[in-house]
Each structure stands twice: as structure tokens, then as C-alpha cells.
Image (cartoon, rainbow, N blue to C red; front, side):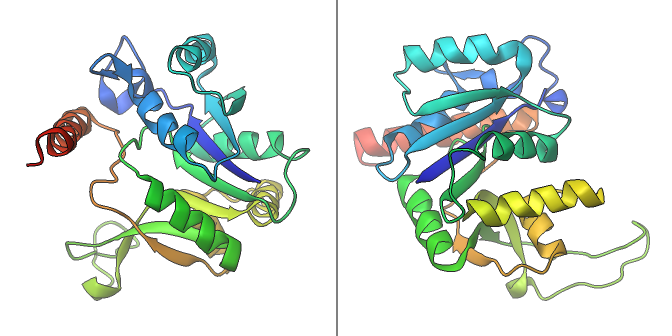
Length: 238
């Protein structure tokens, strides 16, 4: 079984949007999270979708799922304190339905510009190796500094990548890692960071262009421009 775990529990404080969280902001009348979910709904290899959502917006999400005929969402759970906690909640809820070797794709609800090939590549790589991380090549030099003042190193740019999503794993591998981190009190940035702490091998899946996460106000306007450009390309052949 292949399950998409979508975490959309953030309040979006950096968006400066008082009316709606970022995942419910609309483009052409459709919320961002629906654009994201439709990729997984339409993909033939995705069997199940679990969404971790802001508690006060769960009912709104249920209405939207019916409106847009999204039928693969079988669980909607209230989010925790931050992305790490929300992913833990989602993985725990899957414990009684997922086998160790089932595939779990962890994805941001506010990362709507993915495509079917990326989902397929993640599933194939995770089935073969256990852990697949979507990445994009770094286009500028990366600076490493432990104290935020003195530069410790400047790694070679052609060896540097930015972690994106989906991040995809055999269910037992990622669930065991999150349980261990919780027991040991280890904070993490994301799932890739967590597995790196424990020295677990991960394989790269190259991201398509524009696989952006909508975090700040400027991101929303970039998303709108990119989406409209892609739509025009399909319709007009430009």
C-alpha cells in the first residue's frame, strides 16, 4: 500500500494572513491544499491519503474534499505543535493499517506544484532502497556557520542540494525513527534530517522545477504566476 501523509497543520504566521491559514488561501477560487491533494488523488499508485490539519479547519477541509471529489482521504487528524509533531501524529494513526514495507510519502500541504512523475519516482526509489528524498541542486553557494557569525566552511556547490518533498519511506523505517526520536527527545527539521541523525542511507530523487513551498506572501504570488504560466502553456502551446 502507498499512503500520502499530507501535513497542513501550520498557522502560517509568516503569511500575515489574518483571515485564512496559508493552506486555505485560494487561487482561482480553489484552496492551495486542494491543488496539492489533487495530485495524489489522481495518481494511480496512491491508495490512501492521511491529512494532518489545523483543528479548527478540519470541518472546512471535509467540505472541500466533497466539493472537489477527493475520495482517497481516509483520515483527517488535528495537527500538533510544529511539523515534526504533526508528522508523528499522522504516522501513529497509520500504525494499525500499514505494514513495515508499505510506502509512505510525506508531503507539505502548501507544496502544490509537484507532478505525477515525481510521485512515481519517489515510490519506486523508496521501494528499492527504503528512503527517497526529493532534492533540487543548490544554485548558490552554501555557507556553513555554527555560531551564525564566523564562516566555518563553504562546501562545493555541485555537491549541495536543497531538500524538497515528497520525502518517501518504507513505513516501518520512518515510524520507528520518529518513535526513537520522541523517546530520546531529539528535535528535527524534517524527516530527512531525522534519518541523517541516525545514519540511515537515503537516496536522491531529482525535483522538477518550481517545486516550491508557500510560506511567505511573496511565495503565494510566485505560485500564482507559475501556475498561470503552466496553464497557458497547456492551452496555448506557448
